[in-house]
View 1 (cartoon, rainbow, N blue to C red):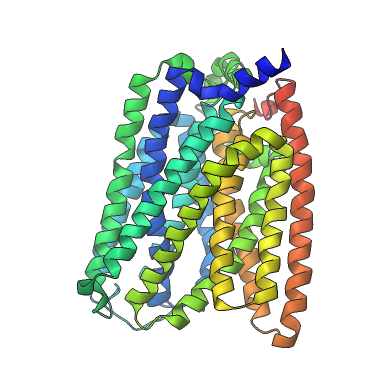
View 2 (cartoon, rainbow, N blue to C red; view 1 turned 180 degrees about the vertical axis):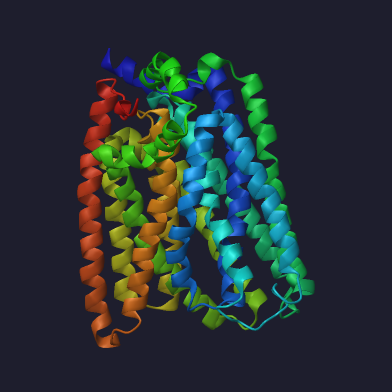
Length: 471
């Protein structure tokens, strides 16, 4: 009997044609979103470094935290006013059209890339960086929130593997195309081929503009009964729907609603635990990203060669991530469960960090960055997103925007501060400083992962809804 139940649970979306169709359409969304974001994200660092300078990059990461705060409040208000799919329409159009506008100004002779004089006073570089920084909390995070709200807990193993694999294919394909294009004879011979970067930016923005059409198709083809997700949360939301509408209208209630996502974050330790999972990852990510940017800029002879280097690395990261998804993610979660899988993330990342600290070469830095990103986006990211399944809509959309927006930028600020501090540490002490720092990060990360995994499994087992007291 137990084997039969396990077989049914593991079959998931494969035994339900409508669920399978739903996740295949969502896979197309992730292909477009991650495919576009992959090339835009690398342009973010490349453009900023060539306009403002590498030294200011750490300060840009810290300032982005402050810039995003009012935007998160505005997003929280839109969550109350619009339906889930309408939010995706809005932000896809904003970032799609915004990307095309920024692409145009990249070619401006004074404020764009054609002006090769780096200066911290060149505001366009800062605006471009902050705009792309909003892509993560207001586009990718929003798509994941939508997926979490329409996914059942038993479909995580198979459904999230489908969408994650599609995102890796999209990212690898666009990064490879950008790499081949920048290495082509026509482009590579030019020291600063501005038109090439404009073309890449426009193509990525057009991919994002296709997302509303795919979501519209999803809403038309999938019955409403298959858009509930975690049933306990759906029943709770329906029960309190009239109450929530009564609260809307007054300025006071609107302000309370805008702050509710932040309140829920601090009210529930479970959501603080989710924040912790992102916080520790982003610290590691910022440190290793700065290392690989430093290595890449030093090795490149021209800006175009530097940009091609970045795309080559990202293509490899997506390919390695795809292998992880196809061979390991689903089986690992199925064999070991959510808690042990969450614990494995910091342990695997700790092992990669140990490798780099032991070897400490340019090749080791590049390899470590690729593997770290692959572990996070192919394994840790879908695990982390599944933690939102037993939470309310307010937690999925509002609190998640605070975690992925302000919270992620806060952790990037910590990582950037560490980069600034270690830049003045004597080389003879650097290894010891790294060991102590990373040991603390990995140790705390493992403790949070263990507790969070236990809490998730208990919530799903008892059919709990987390975040119910904001009503």
